[in-house]
Image (cartoon, rainbow over all chains, first blue to last red; front, side):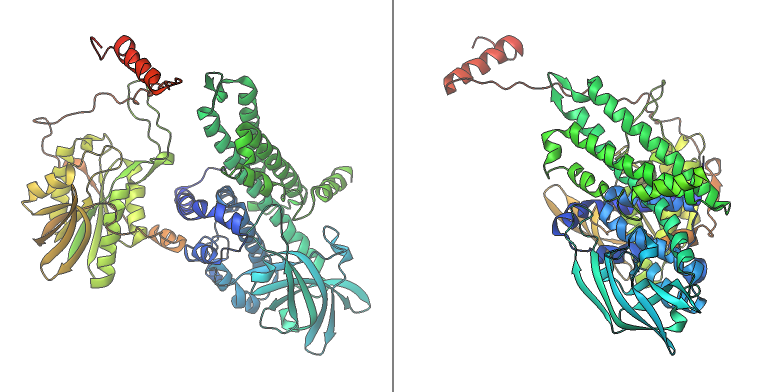
Length: 376
Length: 259
């Protein structure tokens, strides 16, 4: 098990404090108003929290994967919707720093690390989501530019983004392949058509975009033309681990709320935590969270050793997202009627958790990935 | 000009308190944070540094668990940091702690000494006035506003039902109350940068004289007993409720006689 060093402990203390003082008090309003909290996101940037994973040469602090997973859990426990934007940003910073040219990195990473700019990943389409190979958006080489046409849906941070990482179909020689391009909002041809109204994760915008003759310079290709699958899968692998950490954060927040409530809610003359039926729920939550914690940190350990973690990241995503669903549902049950009302945050945890088994690759697809590996 | 700011690491007020078999509070690095009152003092001192270019020296006393408090003060912008190592926790006695801190304030040639008006854990509010006494300096307690005008520290201080405006000559001792300044969040860059700075360490034995004369010790700590639940007196009419209340006060609580 990873033991955090003094420096990491200091970072975690500072992040925890920021979450307690700044994010947690705002979380309910973010959910209620369903508006992206730009100011709070900028504050996160100023505090250096968004820079934690960026490489040093781009103004980042390059902390360990272990430490970042804990940070994500803390932010998710305070506001899962804000952590959606943070998670999306950190996955994309990983993508850019790993696959893009230094010029592209310099163009956007320092601004992403300070929260001055936001980036979104444009993968999902009406007929392509988990199935990346069905992407229909096209990028056609036209002199010094790629001409991009098509539509994207369910794009996290789409309508508030400054940079767009677009996955599109292209021709490489006589073959068809996937290309990853970096566009920015100043380029004509990007149209935001709407933001979705969602069950949970409200305040994290989920947008529908259209690209109409969007001209992206050829030096804005991330990786090589035709490398899109490699870029996407490597990034999704990291993103899935981040979603697992989000699940642990939401589950922890729900469990702690349920524990506290069960100590104060008295029925038949004693606090409900004294009843075994309630205790067992709380204990099962604890066991699940501890197991999930051990799982994500074992994967972080592999990443730090430079190992591939495609199967493991899928395992963690499935386990922790479904754990978050279960724990939040049980926590709501512990709260009884109060849990069903908006006076307590547990109903928000419940709604937010429901997103986790769906996005960043549905859990059904994750099981296919795991199945393919164990049956190979 | 040099400002010495005393900082303390305390139990996180949000942490669940636990005691060992001897009745001592169980402390570990997980449940300790910088004291909020110290932090107000640090923030104002750092603001003065930024406005007027002063040197700010953060000072703490304690075992190794006290180091994060001065590191935090450095991350907030203090120029230097001292830790007086006290592994046996001798300086939990306010009298001794004040002696040591006064000696350190002299050693760093402080023109202004700042700290919290009390600490969030013990709340004894003894150390800063004692430091002022030992150094023979004027001090203002519960300061919610302060500014410097030449050699004068102009303060607003909280008193029972209002605010007292008190000016003192430098050198002086100023005790921060909530509201003096809104502590900043050190950025992650500040935190990482602070790791490279050295904390100067001294031993408590270099300063401590004697603590035997008038010292007092906390023998045992325990949680207050939980408040017993009350009861609601109900009745059809007001006079019935009053009757029942009087009976309860006379027969159960036994605080009324002859009613």
